[in-house]
Image (cartoon, rainbow, N blue to C red):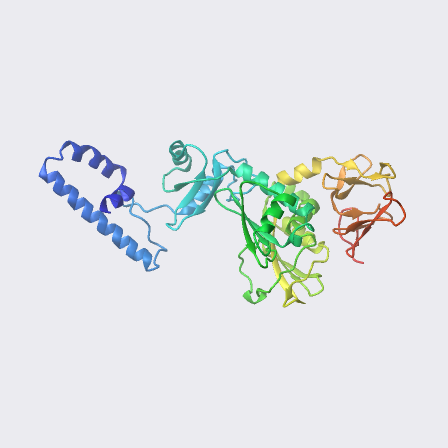
Length: 434
Protein backbone atom coordinates (compact mmCIF):
# COMPACT_ATOMS: atom_id res chain seq x y z
CA UNK A 1 0.00 0.00 0.00
CA UNK A 2 2.89 2.35 0.79
CA UNK A 3 4.42 1.79 -2.62
CA UNK A 4 1.16 2.84 -4.30
CA UNK A 5 1.04 5.99 -2.19
CA UNK A 6 4.56 6.95 -3.18
CA UNK A 7 3.87 6.47 -6.87
CA UNK A 8 0.80 8.69 -6.62
CA UNK A 9 2.24 11.55 -4.60
CA UNK A 10 5.91 11.48 -5.67
CA UNK A 11 7.43 14.29 -7.72
CA UNK A 12 9.87 13.99 -10.60
CA UNK A 13 12.91 14.23 -8.37
CA UNK A 14 11.77 11.38 -6.15
CA UNK A 15 10.85 9.24 -9.15
CA UNK A 16 14.30 9.74 -10.66
CA UNK A 17 15.87 8.93 -7.36
CA UNK A 18 14.00 5.66 -7.01
CA UNK A 19 14.48 4.61 -10.63
CA UNK A 20 18.18 5.48 -11.01
CA UNK A 21 20.05 5.58 -7.70
CA UNK A 22 18.23 2.83 -5.85
CA UNK A 23 18.27 0.39 -8.77
CA UNK A 24 21.98 0.97 -9.43
CA UNK A 25 22.92 0.66 -5.78
CA UNK A 26 20.28 -1.61 -4.38
CA UNK A 27 22.93 -3.87 -2.85
CA UNK A 28 24.15 -1.12 -0.61
CA UNK A 29 22.32 -1.22 2.76
CA UNK A 30 22.50 2.51 3.31
CA UNK A 31 20.37 3.20 0.23
CA UNK A 32 17.89 0.55 1.26
CA UNK A 33 17.56 2.12 4.70
CA UNK A 34 17.11 5.53 3.06
CA UNK A 35 14.34 4.18 0.88
CA UNK A 36 12.54 2.68 3.89
CA UNK A 37 12.78 6.02 5.66
CA UNK A 38 11.23 7.82 2.66
CA UNK A 39 8.46 5.22 2.46
CA UNK A 40 7.51 5.68 6.11
CA UNK A 41 7.68 9.49 5.94
CA UNK A 42 5.52 9.84 2.87
CA UNK A 43 3.04 7.28 4.09
CA UNK A 44 2.59 9.24 7.31
CA UNK A 45 2.13 12.48 5.37
CA UNK A 46 -0.54 10.86 3.22
CA UNK A 47 -2.38 9.43 6.26
CA UNK A 48 -2.31 12.84 7.95
CA UNK A 49 -3.76 14.46 4.80
CA UNK A 50 -6.49 11.85 4.51
CA UNK A 51 -7.35 12.24 8.20
CA UNK A 52 -7.81 15.98 7.80
CA UNK A 53 -9.86 15.50 4.63
CA UNK A 54 -12.14 12.96 6.26
CA UNK A 55 -12.84 15.38 9.11
CA UNK A 56 -14.31 17.83 6.58
CA UNK A 57 -11.57 20.48 6.82
CA UNK A 58 -10.74 20.50 3.12
CA UNK A 59 -11.20 24.19 2.40
CA UNK A 60 -7.55 25.20 2.67
CA UNK A 61 -5.86 21.77 2.53
CA UNK A 62 -4.26 20.49 -0.67
CA UNK A 63 -2.06 17.57 -1.61
CA UNK A 64 1.74 17.74 -1.03
CA UNK A 65 3.49 19.11 -4.10
CA UNK A 66 6.99 19.70 -5.38
CA UNK A 67 9.23 22.06 -3.36
CA UNK A 68 6.49 22.80 -0.82
CA UNK A 69 3.97 24.11 -3.40
CA UNK A 70 0.25 23.42 -3.06
CA UNK A 71 -2.14 21.96 -5.60
CA UNK A 72 -3.72 24.50 -7.91
CA UNK A 73 -7.53 24.44 -7.56
CA UNK A 74 -9.74 22.72 -10.10
CA UNK A 75 -11.29 26.07 -11.04
CA UNK A 76 -7.88 27.32 -12.22
CA UNK A 77 -7.62 24.46 -14.70
CA UNK A 78 -11.25 24.87 -15.76
CA UNK A 79 -10.56 28.54 -16.48
CA UNK A 80 -7.46 27.67 -18.51
CA UNK A 81 -9.38 24.99 -20.40
CA UNK A 82 -12.13 27.48 -21.28
CA UNK A 83 -9.48 29.79 -22.75
CA UNK A 84 -8.14 26.89 -24.80
CA UNK A 85 -11.66 26.67 -26.25
CA UNK A 86 -11.57 30.42 -27.03
CA UNK A 87 -13.46 31.89 -24.07
CA UNK A 88 -12.68 35.60 -23.81
CA UNK A 89 -11.03 37.08 -20.73
CA UNK A 90 -14.24 38.69 -19.49
CA UNK A 91 -16.44 35.57 -19.66
CA UNK A 92 -14.84 32.43 -18.27
CA UNK A 93 -16.77 29.25 -18.95
CA UNK A 94 -17.38 26.47 -21.45
CA UNK A 95 -20.48 26.94 -23.62
CA UNK A 96 -22.04 25.02 -26.50
CA UNK A 97 -21.15 27.66 -29.07
CA UNK A 98 -17.41 26.98 -28.79
CA UNK A 99 -15.43 25.19 -31.50
CA UNK A 100 -14.51 22.02 -29.60
CA UNK A 101 -11.75 19.67 -30.76
CA UNK A 102 -12.77 16.11 -31.65
CA UNK A 103 -11.03 14.67 -28.57
CA UNK A 104 -13.00 16.67 -25.96
CA UNK A 105 -15.97 14.97 -24.30
CA UNK A 106 -16.64 16.98 -21.13
CA UNK A 107 -15.21 17.79 -17.69
CA UNK A 108 -16.13 17.78 -14.00
CA UNK A 109 -14.58 18.21 -10.57
CA UNK A 110 -13.96 14.82 -8.96
CA UNK A 111 -14.08 13.81 -5.29
CA UNK A 112 -10.42 14.77 -4.87
CA UNK A 113 -11.11 18.37 -5.89
CA UNK A 114 -9.28 17.96 -9.17
CA UNK A 115 -10.61 18.69 -12.63
CA UNK A 116 -11.29 15.54 -14.65
CA UNK A 117 -11.21 16.07 -18.42
CA UNK A 118 -12.94 13.29 -20.37
CA UNK A 119 -11.25 12.64 -23.70
CA UNK A 120 -11.49 10.37 -26.72
CA UNK A 121 -8.27 8.99 -28.18
CA UNK A 122 -4.69 8.45 -27.04
CA UNK A 123 -4.70 9.53 -23.37
CA UNK A 124 -0.89 9.61 -23.09
CA UNK A 125 -0.57 11.98 -26.06
CA UNK A 126 -3.50 14.09 -24.91
CA UNK A 127 -2.17 14.36 -21.36
CA UNK A 128 1.15 15.65 -22.66
CA UNK A 129 -0.62 18.13 -24.94
CA UNK A 130 -2.99 19.34 -22.20
CA UNK A 131 -0.18 19.69 -19.68
CA UNK A 132 1.50 22.13 -22.03
CA UNK A 133 -1.73 23.96 -22.94
CA UNK A 134 -2.91 24.28 -19.32
CA UNK A 135 0.49 25.13 -17.85
CA UNK A 136 0.53 22.26 -15.37
CA UNK A 137 -0.40 18.63 -14.80
CA UNK A 138 -2.63 18.82 -11.72
CA UNK A 139 -5.68 17.46 -13.49
CA UNK A 140 -7.03 13.98 -14.26
CA UNK A 141 -8.08 12.38 -17.54
CA UNK A 142 -11.17 10.26 -18.05
CA UNK A 143 -12.56 8.35 -21.02
CA UNK A 144 -15.50 9.86 -22.86
CA UNK A 145 -18.23 8.01 -24.76
CA UNK A 146 -18.62 10.60 -27.52
CA UNK A 147 -17.20 13.99 -28.41
CA UNK A 148 -18.79 17.25 -27.34
CA UNK A 149 -19.46 18.04 -31.00
CA UNK A 150 -21.50 14.84 -31.39
CA UNK A 151 -23.21 15.46 -28.05
CA UNK A 152 -24.36 18.98 -29.00
CA UNK A 153 -25.63 17.82 -32.39
CA UNK A 154 -27.56 14.97 -30.75
CA UNK A 155 -29.07 17.32 -28.14
CA UNK A 156 -30.31 19.64 -30.90
CA UNK A 157 -31.90 16.76 -32.80
CA UNK A 158 -33.41 15.42 -29.57
CA UNK A 159 -34.96 18.79 -28.68
CA UNK A 160 -36.44 19.14 -32.16
CA UNK A 161 -37.85 15.59 -32.04
CA UNK A 162 -39.45 16.17 -28.62
CA UNK A 163 -40.97 19.42 -29.83
CA UNK A 164 -42.45 17.74 -32.93
CA UNK A 165 -43.80 14.74 -31.03
CA UNK A 166 -45.06 16.50 -27.92
CA UNK A 167 -48.44 14.74 -27.92
CA UNK A 168 -47.23 11.31 -29.03
CA UNK A 169 -45.56 10.17 -25.86
CA UNK A 170 -45.79 11.18 -22.20
CA UNK A 171 -47.13 14.60 -23.27
CA UNK A 172 -43.80 16.22 -22.47
CA UNK A 173 -43.42 14.58 -19.06
CA UNK A 174 -39.71 13.95 -19.27
CA UNK A 175 -36.44 15.57 -18.27
CA UNK A 176 -33.03 15.36 -19.88
CA UNK A 177 -29.53 16.24 -18.82
CA UNK A 178 -25.94 16.05 -20.03
CA UNK A 179 -23.20 13.84 -18.59
CA UNK A 180 -19.47 14.72 -18.61
CA UNK A 181 -18.72 11.63 -20.73
CA UNK A 182 -20.93 12.93 -23.55
CA UNK A 183 -23.98 10.76 -22.87
CA UNK A 184 -27.48 12.17 -22.30
CA UNK A 185 -29.77 11.17 -19.44
CA UNK A 186 -33.50 11.00 -20.12
CA UNK A 187 -35.99 10.40 -17.32
CA UNK A 188 -39.39 9.63 -18.81
CA UNK A 189 -42.77 9.08 -17.19
CA UNK A 190 -44.18 5.58 -17.53
CA UNK A 191 -45.19 2.35 -15.82
CA UNK A 192 -42.35 0.18 -17.15
CA UNK A 193 -39.48 0.02 -19.65
CA UNK A 194 -41.85 -0.35 -22.60
CA UNK A 195 -42.14 3.46 -22.61
CA UNK A 196 -38.44 3.58 -23.53
CA UNK A 197 -38.98 1.43 -26.62
CA UNK A 198 -41.92 3.63 -27.55
CA UNK A 199 -39.79 6.76 -27.18
CA UNK A 200 -36.98 5.30 -29.29
CA UNK A 201 -39.43 4.27 -32.02
CA UNK A 202 -41.74 7.30 -32.16
CA UNK A 203 -39.60 10.20 -30.96
CA UNK A 204 -35.84 9.77 -31.12
CA UNK A 205 -33.08 7.21 -30.76
CA UNK A 206 -29.32 7.45 -30.28
CA UNK A 207 -26.64 5.20 -28.77
CA UNK A 208 -25.62 7.94 -26.33
CA UNK A 209 -29.05 8.17 -24.67
CA UNK A 210 -29.32 6.77 -21.12
CA UNK A 211 -32.91 6.15 -19.99
CA UNK A 212 -34.65 6.00 -16.63
CA UNK A 213 -38.38 5.42 -16.04
CA UNK A 214 -40.30 7.19 -13.25
CA UNK A 215 -43.93 7.18 -12.15
CA UNK A 216 -44.12 10.96 -12.37
CA UNK A 217 -41.73 13.46 -13.89
CA UNK A 218 -42.05 17.22 -13.69
CA UNK A 219 -40.48 19.49 -16.29
CA UNK A 220 -37.38 21.03 -14.74
CA UNK A 221 -36.09 24.34 -16.06
CA UNK A 222 -32.39 25.18 -16.16
CA UNK A 223 -32.26 26.64 -12.65
CA UNK A 224 -29.24 28.55 -11.40
CA UNK A 225 -28.26 29.23 -7.79
CA UNK A 226 -28.64 32.93 -7.00
CA UNK A 227 -28.77 34.97 -3.81
CA UNK A 228 -32.46 35.66 -3.38
CA UNK A 229 -35.16 35.10 -0.79
CA UNK A 230 -35.36 31.36 -0.14
CA UNK A 231 -39.03 31.72 0.81
CA UNK A 232 -39.73 32.23 -2.88
CA UNK A 233 -38.82 28.59 -3.53
CA UNK A 234 -41.22 25.93 -2.35
CA UNK A 235 -41.23 22.47 -3.86
CA UNK A 236 -44.58 21.65 -5.40
CA UNK A 237 -45.92 18.57 -7.10
CA UNK A 238 -45.77 20.11 -10.56
CA UNK A 239 -43.99 23.33 -11.63
CA UNK A 240 -45.36 25.73 -14.26
CA UNK A 241 -44.87 24.60 -17.85
CA UNK A 242 -44.43 26.46 -21.10
CA UNK A 243 -47.02 25.36 -23.70
CA UNK A 244 -45.29 22.56 -25.58
CA UNK A 245 -42.67 21.91 -22.91
CA UNK A 246 -39.04 22.85 -22.42
CA UNK A 247 -38.06 22.55 -26.08
CA UNK A 248 -40.87 24.87 -27.16
CA UNK A 249 -39.79 27.40 -24.53
CA UNK A 250 -36.16 27.34 -25.63
CA UNK A 251 -37.20 27.70 -29.27
CA UNK A 252 -39.43 30.64 -28.33
CA UNK A 253 -36.56 32.41 -26.55
CA UNK A 254 -34.13 31.70 -29.38
CA UNK A 255 -36.56 32.87 -32.07
CA UNK A 256 -37.89 35.88 -30.17
CA UNK A 257 -34.59 37.33 -28.95
CA UNK A 258 -33.66 40.69 -30.46
CA UNK A 259 -30.05 41.57 -29.79
CA UNK A 260 -29.77 45.15 -28.49
CA UNK A 261 -27.90 47.29 -31.02
CA UNK A 262 -25.52 48.73 -28.41
CA UNK A 263 -24.63 45.28 -27.03
CA UNK A 264 -24.17 43.93 -30.56
CA UNK A 265 -21.74 46.70 -31.52
CA UNK A 266 -19.75 46.29 -28.29
CA UNK A 267 -19.70 42.47 -28.64
CA UNK A 268 -21.36 41.93 -25.25
CA UNK A 269 -22.42 38.34 -24.62
CA UNK A 270 -23.38 36.31 -21.58
CA UNK A 271 -26.16 35.05 -19.33
CA UNK A 272 -28.91 37.00 -17.60
CA UNK A 273 -30.97 35.28 -14.91
CA UNK A 274 -34.60 36.36 -14.56
CA UNK A 275 -37.07 35.60 -11.78
CA UNK A 276 -40.84 35.83 -12.24
CA UNK A 277 -44.11 34.77 -10.69
CA UNK A 278 -46.54 32.49 -12.53
CA UNK A 279 -49.96 32.92 -10.96
CA UNK A 280 -52.63 30.23 -10.66
CA UNK A 281 -54.08 31.22 -14.06
CA UNK A 282 -50.69 30.93 -15.84
CA UNK A 283 -50.14 34.69 -16.20
CA UNK A 284 -46.58 35.96 -15.63
CA UNK A 285 -46.10 38.77 -13.13
CA UNK A 286 -43.38 40.50 -11.05
CA UNK A 287 -40.55 39.92 -13.54
CA UNK A 288 -37.12 41.00 -12.26
CA UNK A 289 -33.39 40.47 -12.83
CA UNK A 290 -31.57 38.42 -10.18
CA UNK A 291 -28.25 38.07 -12.03
CA UNK A 292 -27.26 40.91 -14.35
CA UNK A 293 -24.83 40.87 -17.27
CA UNK A 294 -25.37 44.24 -18.95
CA UNK A 295 -28.21 46.77 -18.81
CA UNK A 296 -29.01 46.35 -22.53
CA UNK A 297 -29.14 42.55 -22.24
CA UNK A 298 -31.09 42.79 -18.96
CA UNK A 299 -33.84 44.83 -20.61
CA UNK A 300 -34.10 42.40 -23.52
CA UNK A 301 -34.32 39.43 -21.14
CA UNK A 302 -37.16 41.15 -19.28
CA UNK A 303 -38.95 41.84 -22.56
CA UNK A 304 -38.73 38.20 -23.66
CA UNK A 305 -40.16 36.86 -20.39
CA UNK A 306 -42.96 39.44 -20.42
CA UNK A 307 -43.83 38.37 -23.98
CA UNK A 308 -44.33 34.71 -22.98
CA UNK A 309 -47.74 33.25 -23.77
CA UNK A 310 -49.84 32.14 -20.82
CA UNK A 311 -48.13 29.20 -19.09
CA UNK A 312 -49.66 26.06 -17.64
CA UNK A 313 -49.70 26.98 -13.93
CA UNK A 314 -47.93 25.03 -11.21
CA UNK A 315 -50.06 22.69 -9.14
CA UNK A 316 -50.11 21.30 -5.63
CA UNK A 317 -52.29 18.23 -5.19
CA UNK A 318 -53.81 19.02 -8.61
CA UNK A 319 -54.81 22.51 -7.43
CA UNK A 320 -53.36 25.47 -9.42
CA UNK A 321 -51.13 27.73 -7.32
CA UNK A 322 -48.97 30.84 -7.61
CA UNK A 323 -45.31 29.87 -8.02
CA UNK A 324 -41.98 31.65 -8.53
CA UNK A 325 -39.59 30.56 -11.26
CA UNK A 326 -36.00 31.42 -12.20
CA UNK A 327 -34.77 31.18 -15.78
CA UNK A 328 -31.40 31.99 -17.40
CA UNK A 329 -31.38 33.73 -20.80
CA UNK A 330 -28.20 33.23 -22.86
CA UNK A 331 -27.11 35.88 -25.35
CA UNK A 332 -24.81 34.56 -28.12
CA UNK A 333 -23.86 36.68 -31.10
CA UNK A 334 -23.25 33.59 -33.26
CA UNK A 335 -26.83 32.39 -32.72
CA UNK A 336 -28.26 35.82 -33.46
CA UNK A 337 -26.22 36.27 -36.65
CA UNK A 338 -27.27 32.85 -37.90
CA UNK A 339 -30.94 33.62 -37.32
CA UNK A 340 -30.74 37.11 -38.85
CA UNK A 341 -29.15 35.90 -42.08
CA UNK A 342 -31.33 32.84 -42.60
CA UNK A 343 -33.95 32.84 -45.38
CA UNK A 344 -37.25 30.93 -45.25
CA UNK A 345 -39.79 29.71 -47.79
CA UNK A 346 -43.04 31.60 -48.21
CA UNK A 347 -46.08 30.07 -46.56
CA UNK A 348 -48.37 28.45 -49.15
CA UNK A 349 -51.83 29.98 -49.33
CA UNK A 350 -54.44 29.04 -51.97
CA UNK A 351 -51.80 26.97 -53.82
CA UNK A 352 -49.44 29.94 -54.06
CA UNK A 353 -47.03 32.05 -52.00
CA UNK A 354 -48.60 34.02 -49.19
CA UNK A 355 -49.38 37.56 -50.46
CA UNK A 356 -47.89 40.69 -48.92
CA UNK A 357 -50.31 42.24 -46.41
CA UNK A 358 -49.61 45.28 -44.26
CA UNK A 359 -45.97 45.17 -45.43
CA UNK A 360 -45.31 41.55 -44.39
CA UNK A 361 -45.98 38.04 -45.64
CA UNK A 362 -45.93 34.71 -43.85
CA UNK A 363 -42.93 32.37 -43.99
CA UNK A 364 -42.50 28.80 -42.79
CA UNK A 365 -39.55 26.74 -41.51
CA UNK A 366 -38.84 23.01 -41.77
CA UNK A 367 -40.84 22.38 -38.58
CA UNK A 368 -43.91 23.94 -40.16
CA UNK A 369 -43.76 26.95 -37.80
CA UNK A 370 -45.04 30.31 -39.03
CA UNK A 371 -43.08 33.60 -39.10
CA UNK A 372 -43.09 36.83 -41.10
CA UNK A 373 -40.81 38.52 -43.66
CA UNK A 374 -40.80 41.91 -45.38
CA UNK A 375 -41.15 42.65 -49.10
CA UNK A 376 -37.39 42.09 -49.68
CA UNK A 377 -37.56 38.64 -48.07
CA UNK A 378 -35.74 39.68 -44.90
CA UNK A 379 -36.88 37.76 -41.83
CA UNK A 380 -38.67 40.14 -39.49
CA UNK A 381 -40.21 37.60 -37.09
CA UNK A 382 -38.50 34.20 -37.00
CA UNK A 383 -40.89 31.24 -37.50
CA UNK A 384 -42.08 30.12 -34.08
CA UNK A 385 -45.88 30.04 -34.14
CA UNK A 386 -47.91 26.89 -34.72
CA UNK A 387 -50.16 29.13 -36.80
CA UNK A 388 -50.49 32.82 -37.58
CA UNK A 389 -52.90 34.96 -39.57
CA UNK A 390 -51.74 37.75 -41.93
CA UNK A 391 -50.99 41.18 -40.46
CA UNK A 392 -53.75 43.74 -40.49
CA UNK A 393 -53.55 47.26 -39.05
CA UNK A 394 -50.17 46.53 -37.50
CA UNK A 395 -51.06 43.31 -35.68
CA UNK A 396 -51.52 39.60 -36.36
CA UNK A 397 -53.35 36.84 -34.51
CA UNK A 398 -51.07 33.89 -33.62
CA UNK A 399 -50.92 30.79 -31.44
CA UNK A 400 -48.02 28.79 -29.95
CA UNK A 401 -49.98 25.55 -29.74
CA UNK A 402 -53.16 24.06 -31.10
CA UNK A 403 -54.57 21.41 -33.42
CA UNK A 404 -55.15 21.41 -37.15
CA UNK A 405 -58.65 20.18 -38.01
CA UNK A 406 -60.49 19.44 -41.22
CA UNK A 407 -63.50 21.51 -42.21
CA UNK A 408 -66.51 19.20 -42.31
CA UNK A 409 -67.64 18.36 -45.83
CA UNK A 410 -64.45 19.67 -47.49
CA UNK A 411 -63.12 16.19 -48.31
CA UNK A 412 -59.77 17.08 -46.81
CA UNK A 413 -59.26 20.21 -48.91
CA UNK A 414 -59.94 22.79 -46.21
CA UNK A 415 -58.56 22.95 -42.68
CA UNK A 416 -58.51 25.32 -39.71
CA UNK A 417 -56.50 25.68 -36.51
CA UNK A 418 -58.16 25.27 -33.12
CA UNK A 419 -56.43 26.69 -30.04
CA UNK A 420 -57.35 28.23 -26.69
CA UNK A 421 -54.11 30.24 -26.73
CA UNK A 422 -54.69 32.85 -29.45
CA UNK A 423 -53.11 36.28 -28.92
CA UNK A 424 -51.95 39.26 -31.00
CA UNK A 425 -48.41 40.43 -31.82
CA UNK A 426 -47.06 43.64 -33.31
CA UNK A 427 -44.60 43.85 -36.22
CA UNK A 428 -41.62 43.27 -33.94
CA UNK A 429 -43.10 40.02 -32.61
CA UNK A 430 -43.99 41.60 -29.26
CA UNK A 431 -47.10 40.20 -27.59
CA UNK A 432 -49.91 42.74 -27.36
CA UNK A 433 -52.20 43.07 -24.39
CA UNK A 434 -55.78 42.16 -25.23
